[in-house]
Structure formats: structure tokens, C-alpha cells
Amino acid sequence: MIRTWSILLLIAILGVWPLSTAGAQPVLFDFENAPLYSPLPISLTVGGIVANFSATGQGYSFQMADVMGFTPVGFSGKCVYPSSVYASDLLVAFPNATLTDFSILYAPEEYACDSSATMRVTGYMNNVFVATNTTTAYPPGTWPSATLSLSYAQGFNSVVVHYDAPPPTGGDYGPIFMADNMWVTPKAAPPACRGDFNCDHTISFADIDPFVAVLGGGACCDPTGQNCDVNGDGAVNFSDIDPFVALLTSGATCP
Image (cartoon, rainbow, N blue to C red; front, side, top):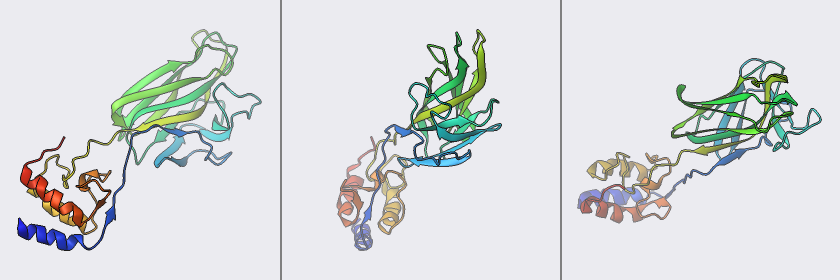
């Protein structure tokens, strides 16, 4: 044990490596950072979350919400706007995040209709279906607005927003929609287990080599960095050695 401590100490004096933190707060894509008139596909980043927007059919572009001389309730500034009168799915992929919650404000093309279209959102994890949900705008009318949402605790990293069915009572409508104010909530990171350098959810001598690697500038197995910050000071350096050794000898376990 003394020999191991000495080796770690020598490596630790090489420097200090700051750690990153991560949370699970909702993030709003209001599309104000989108280039006006730009058609899909396009990538936008908000709060560190990347959203890749694409579409089927003739797709969508970013327009001002009042481009047709009116603004649906809840819309403002720029929005996702249909590029034709033909139905088109809105596809959104999140390459660097797993989500538990998704919602988007939408308004279907309807003119004084007595009922509204059914909209569907479907979530996928690595292209495998995980969950779906539908909603209908109420009250109906002219370009009525509503929020379409999806929640799935195990997580998903892409969604398809689909015009599912027209107003059941008919009327003057088209199978297209506008969209604005997309909220996403990333999946919360698992509880930190300080000293678990190989992220196997135990603290053991198997963590020694990964500890040495992190002290030498290697990446922490935990994306939040908390597992590797043994003393909780926000960095990995020689001051983590004593508490790490104490964890190994005390038989501490992960939460």
C-alpha cells in the first residue's frame, strides 16, 4: 500500500485537472439562434445540447412566426415553418444527449374548424422505438396551438413529430403545422461514487490503475467527473490520494 501511495503521489504532482459538472435542467430551443429562412437540415446548440433538425418530404425552414400575417398563440420570433402544403415529419436527433422529456409547441393549419388534428411524437433510443404520445389542440379554431410532449424515464435520443390524423369533423384544413419553443430535459447523471475510477459501481483495488491514469491526465470514466474527484474540491491532484487510500482501506461502498 505504501509503494502504491508513493507512485500515485509522484504522478499527482504533475498537475491539477479541473472536472466538469452536469445537470438535468430543462433546456429551451426557441429557434432565435437559427438563421432566418434557412431550410432543414440544420444543427442548433443550446445549453450544450446539440439538436440536429431534418425532415421528410419537402421539409421546413426557419421563418418569423408572423410570416403569414398572424401569430399562433404562444409563438414569437422565429419558428419552424412548413416549406409546402404537403405533410412532412419533423425529425430531431440529439447526438450528445439522452433525454427523459421532450415538448414542442405546434399549430396545425386549420381555419375555423370544429375539431383539430391529432399530432404524434415518437421517441427512439439509437433508432429503436421506446415511446410515443399524441395530443389534440383545444379549443379548435384557426391555427390553434398546443404542446405535444413525450416523457420516458429510461431515455431517448431522437424524436419524430408527425401529423397523425386530420380533424375528425373535417373542415378547411391542411396536413401541415408550425412549431416553436422546443423544451428538452437531459437524463440525470447517476449518483456520484467518489473513488470509483473504473465506474463499476464499487470501490476496490481495481480502481488504482484508473486513478493513476486520471492523475496522469487521462479522462474520468464518469462524464460528470465527480467519481474521480475524491475529496470534492473540483480537481484531481495529490490531495485526492489520502482520501482515496482511506476509501480503499475502509471498505466504503457506492450509494
